[in-house]
Amino acid sequence: MTSLLFIAVAYLLGSLSFAVIVSRAMGLPDPRSFGSGNPGATNVLRTGRKAAAVLTLFGDALKGWVAVVLARALAPQFGLVEDIVLLCALAVFIGHLFPVFFRFQGGKGVATALGVLVGLNPWLGLACLATWLFMAGVFRISSLAALTTAVLAPVYAGLLMGWGNTAITVLVIALLLVYRHKSNLIKLVTGRETRIGAHK
Image (cartoon, rainbow, N blue to C red; front, side, top):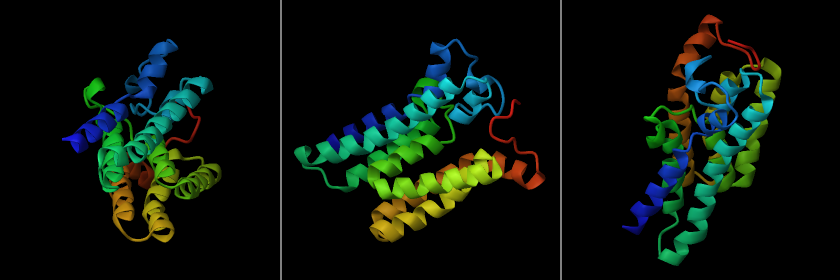
């Protein structure tokens, strides 16, 4: 029962869509109503409000990190096994993709995934962040950077933490992230993908 409570709280935390929350607070259009329609930092950036995009990025990453770190800190006190941390990592990520507070219309999960990975292992998060920044800096395409990072994240996890449950969890997160980017894959192949900072 306690395990389910941990997972439920992580999911609810993930369901806080900061793209929508920040946009409403700053009087901006709903990010689901323009551009890619994705409630994420990249789409918020299309409004021209960099501060809103930064707050969205920070909030979405922070909730992933908090869910993992809190689960790890509190689990021993409730006699829960270490794997509850991995389940909470999945739950907060799924909450972001399918938020109960926003009719299950969530983002693509890049920032939240990064927060989760940093929570699991700071070096893992740093490796993924470096990969994203490199790809985004060279190609200026957010989705390409995200997809490349998703492919490499399970490899990084295996090399850093062994090929056990953590690597499997990261693989599941990576597969979900790739699935959420399926429309971007089509645009990448056809050369129609929008570059970072472009107004759509």
